[in-house]
Image (cartoon, rainbow, N blue to C red; front, side, top):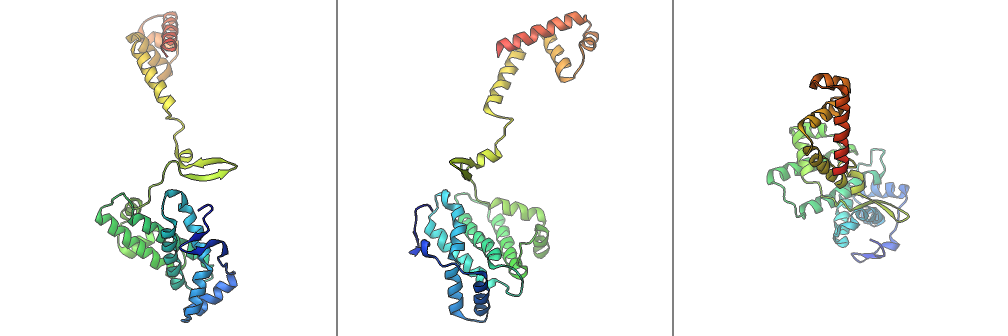
Length: 256
C-alpha cells in the first residue's frame, strides 16, 4: 500500500471524508430512494474501504482487486444499514467490508475445504449478515445456531475451516523499525530448538549411566526423595548414595 496513490483509477490521496452528520443525512436520503445520495455515500466512504484492505497489504494480493471487493462490501453495508438504530455507520460498515474481503480471499485460496463444510460456512455467514442487518451487531455462535438449527460445534468447525492462513512472518506491529511478527506472539519459548538438543543430549548421557545410578537420580530428582530414603529403598548406605549421585551428575555434565 505504501507509495501507491491510485487504486482502480481512484486517487487515494484525494478521497473525500464525510462527517458523521453528513453520513447520517445521506443515509436517510438513500433509504428514501435517492440514488445520488447513495453514490455520495459510496464516494465518501472509500477511505473506509482503503483502511480495511491495508490489513491485507503484505499478503501479496492484488490491491486493485481487494479494493473492488471492499467496495462491494461497502455498498452492501449502505443498502442494509438500519437508520433507526443509534449506531455509527463505520461501526457497521467495517465488519461488512472486512467480511466481503475475507470471503473473496477464502474463495480464491489455494487451500481446499470440503463442499459440505464450505456450504455450512456460507449458511453461517449469510445468517450472520442478516442478523447484523437487523440488529446492527455481530451475533454470538449460540444465536446463529438457534437460527440455523445447527450445532454450535459444527458452526465453529466450519468457520475455522475457512479462516485464511496467516504467515508466521506477517508483521502485526512495528515501532521504530522493531517489527513484531505473528511468530513472536505464538512461539513456544519452552520447546525451543536449543531445548530439544539439550534434552536429546541429556537422554543420551543418562542412558550411559549404570542401572543403579539411573535409579538413584530418578528417586532423588523425579520423586523428590532424600538420600536417606533412597539408601533405605536401595539397601546401601547414605554415603554410597551421595557418592553415586555425585559421580552420575559429574558424568552427565561431562557428556553434555
